[in-house]
Image (tube, rainbow, N blue to C red; front, side):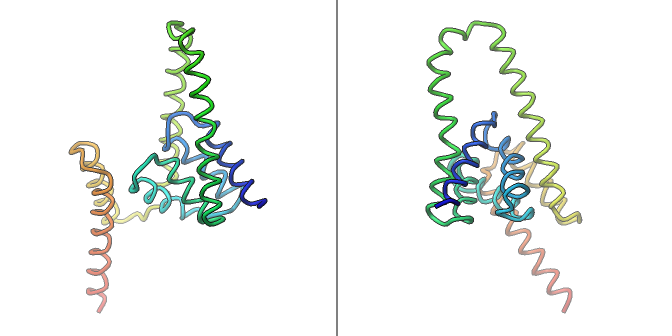
Length: 181
């Protein structure tokens, strides 16, 4: 029961102090569940992001659910999911009530511009952290470049891109195994 409460509180903290959506949460999730709590390994973050991105729903909720399940089973998944969602729900409830009064105030608009810039920095930091975990070889660079082009410029579904990358990785592995024989 202690682990369930700890999952809830950890993900409530993550959900409460992250602005900008799921990708902005990745560095916080990494710091809390890998470095502080040591619930998962550093290399597992890439898998969690890949699974969270390729399943339907918001990445933050999917990542919280996955980590919660990995740490404490079904009850852990529920605790982490509710924990990560609760602050946003509460904040949106309060903002929707108050925003009507202050939406035309220039300071509020500038504050949100500042938040967006900060969130972008967190996303870039997460990108660098994930890049450090990726293999540095020609195949990996081909996969990364192709995935980026497919998603960013050709607007191919993220699920299809991830499946295609997995298949390319598997084909590369099989080709390497065949050459080794």
